[in-house]
Image 1 (cartoon, helix red, strand yellow):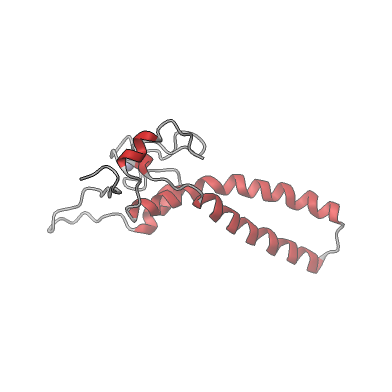
Image 2 (cartoon, rainbow, N blue to C red; image 1 turned 180 degrees about the horizontal axis):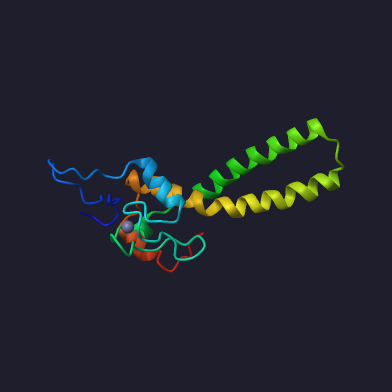
Length: 150
Ligand SMILES: [Zn+2]
């Protein structure tokens, strides 16, 4: 198989008569959102604030092969914008505040929401991508090892 083809990592599947289920997508996303390996739920997913470990220490799933790229920031901005805009509209409906007061509330609030949400959103994205088998090819992963992730 040429190196440029995308790889499709699969967790060890149970035998046909086995009772062990594979991980559902929602479970993989929730495990990732908690910073755990989407496959086993025991190993840690992140090696820093947003850097994904190359492999899970428990089940050796190649979580570092999953490149979420710009998806987590996009989803985070999407969520935060809806919360902040809804909050601003609700606040303007019930109270007339000065622009400076609104900025004093919403600018730090927006920043705090982004900082709070980016990591769980990235973990959930990595979990879903793992479930969907969206891994980068081996050749690209070797060339990009010196890259800092996000
Ligand atoms: Zn694992």
